[in-house]
Length: 221
Ligand SMILES: NC(=O)c1ccc[n+]([C@@H]2O[C@H](COP(=O)([O-])OP(=O)(O)OC[C@H]3O[C@@H](n4cnc5c(N)ncnc54)[C@H](OP(=O)(O)O)[C@@H]3O)[C@@H](O)[C@H]2O)c1
Image 1 (cartoon, rainbow, N blue to C red):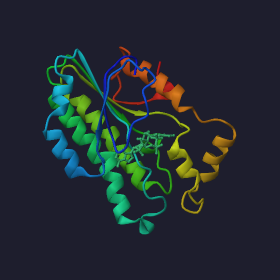
Image 2: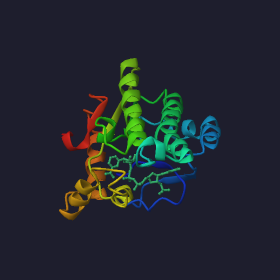
Image 3: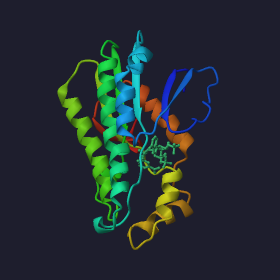
Image 4: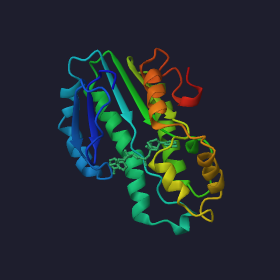
């Protein structure tokens, strides 16, 4: 990632980095397992990782679409897992990161949010609520005004990933905007993960990062 060493938390092996010279360390962790995550965070691997750095970046990317449909149809285990991955994990990691990197002069936190956190999308109540929680966490952390700590909750746009496949596989009965998403894919209107990642990194490393606590990558300059 542009020569920046990466400490990656994921369930499985991460794809190789495009920049073969960059350092990548992987930690196998299931972010829906809150207790394992908490135990890993208190070991302070994060503190060892950022020690002596001038800049530390936290990207909270993992997310689940969760149950689709009105609440009466929701599987309670899926609701629990979705909130653990989408809300509990990013807030725990943000707190541990802020503590671990307290001596790093430039600290930046990004939550991968969604337009769904700002607009009610029928059938997606858990996903919408989880992303709204990230947005408000970012607004509030920004209001704390801790020197050197910047944060943004960012909607990445509509990106051609597994999550888009998953939502196109949903029934239009549970998700009334289904046809709109199928149409966007058919018309080639989805951004590629590669172009989104490049735009995202330009924005993350830019001077304006954190000027607004809630943003949309499509508006980023
Ligand atoms: N794609 C879009 O159009 C879009 C739009 C708005 C917001 N977003 C947000 O962007 C972020 C990335 O989404 P995506 O489109 O890349 O979704 P995706 O294709 O479904 O990928 C989800 C990511 O979350 C990880 N993840 C899920 N459950 C996990 C768990 N229990 N422990 C650890 N990692 C877990 C997955 O890891 P594995 O590889 O292990 O499965 C994968 O890397 C999400 O926060 C999503 O809400 C996406």
